[in-house]
Length: 158
Image (cartoon, rainbow, N blue to C red):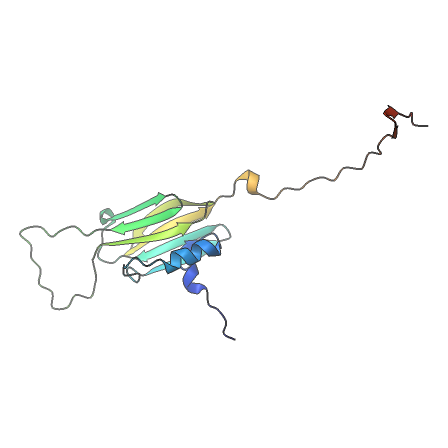
């Protein structure tokens, strides 16, 4: 029997393991090229994550990072060349085409920061668990003996 590999399902989801939503997201066919731009998802600590996108050729003002309904949306749109500048490439290996990359986030994952350096866009995420969802210890009280009741009247304890 072959073992199932769920790694492709976990690539674009951060902070939860809800298999139904993962399968729905992974099997959705949107016709987009899912390999551009390449990215990493890194677990920095127990409650911190980092998404890094390789966006060589883009400047910081050509990139946009937004969150909407548990979805992290990263878009890149290259600016048009100045009208007097035309460039002739003998080889163009650095793709600078428009893209939109979406990541599903759990309810407890919040985006805290985004930075751009050395051709990498880094988006910092943190897991914030609300107090009502954190585990709490329940004290066990000693049992109080119940008073005896016969035919609607309480008997005095002897």
